[in-house]
Image 1 (cartoon, rainbow, N blue to C red):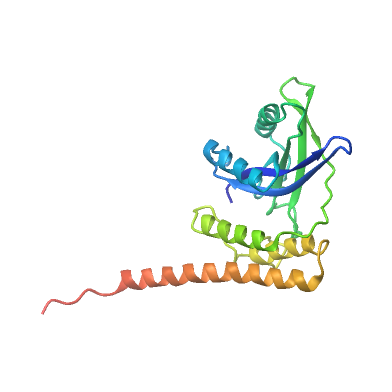
Image 2: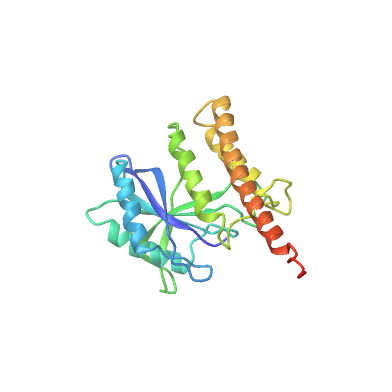
Length: 237
């Protein structure tokens, strides 16, 4: 439930005025409270990973876990800083905000805002004005094995975190879906536009089993630890 952060890889066509976001590479966060900043070491590693895959660093993302994906003043300042650094030579650099568990959104689909910062100043002179992008989903079929392995990596990295989402809990007060079912439903909508339903469902079953096996293993370990802690000591003879 804490904010996460990372880099976006892809391509920019100046002629078509289109930014193609093809990959997301998670980074470690230097978070304090609800805000987060990108760890410089993992930022460099993420940039190198995207370059190996043939992508330019085209933007960054972070989450607003349970509230609207609108940029805060700090988000605007951060985007302006990244935009200035990465956009040298005329390259495009966007910010993306994802809201997976917005309390105001009962639908199981995450909300996304993409933006850039203009040179125009707000009426009170306190910040530069952000402009929102129009977002369309690309129709390329995903790299299934890569997505699966990235999912495995994310589960292992975050499942024991104190701020990890309890995937077996109901995701919204007006829904009967668990957080895991919400995630799968969101992916189902995305995959439905790029592949046939049989391939999509087979892949979603693999993702679901990956989560279930990981959390089942964690519960077994916790139970074993509890049993160990509650075993009575031997009575002295």
